[in-house]
Image (cartoon, rainbow, N blue to C red; front, side, top):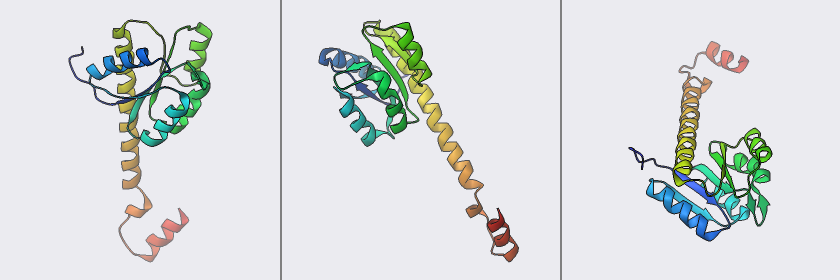
Length: 164
């Protein structure tokens, strides 16, 4: 167990109930909230519903209704600030490379030690927190320096705003 208790929400998509429950329990013991779903359809549904809360998407590569590699762009489109970690029982180097090129944070083989899973999820969650913080700061800076934040009603100021 880490020295600090991470927080955050993880979407866990896996069709194997026993494995899904074991992974969820491990992550919950580390302080995470875990939303569990058994297939891609429900995973995408959960993303639509909770995209602002989910920091890490932990998805099996082989699901009954889709492949994690093919779903990766959809995950990223629905939750652009979340990190995606793909898991597989039969990983290949080619699939791992493809996953990383498509934007996956990491690509894990199922059955690896819980410690490795926790380390990868901790790193992914921290990266997601940093992305959210940067997005929030960019929004604040954008609002602070927008034309709407200018004070004054002078004709020259209004003309300058229109020109810009």
